Length: 117
Image 1 (cartoon, one colour):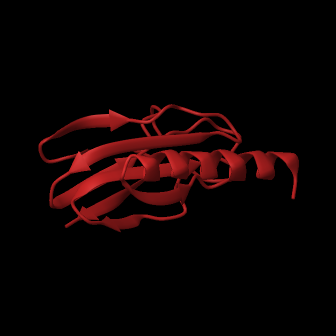
Image 2 (tube, helix red, strand yellow; image 1 turned 30 degrees about the vertical axis):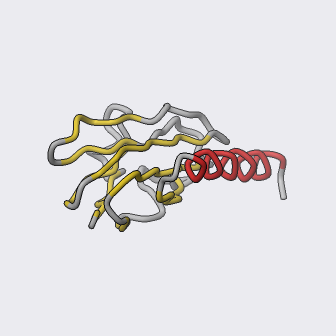
């Protein structure tokens, strides 16, 4: 395992532990190394605290954000290669969008659907 891959794994594990300590349902995704997309386009979680943890193995900076009915957009930190962006919110039953808020990335396809309920 390369040092970068190991660092990504350690950071992702730490982010998951923080989310779990907060009592959140934790969903893990990853940015694609070569394209403006995530490795998953559909996520499902029960209503309540939800955290999405995104590992970034790509050269471009990325983050993860959530928006939906009754929710102002919540943005995770934009991170460079090897970083982990985490976003969390208390969500009601409904359909939300998770996306990269870096300008142009969502429009290029870096988004997905989060079904809560």
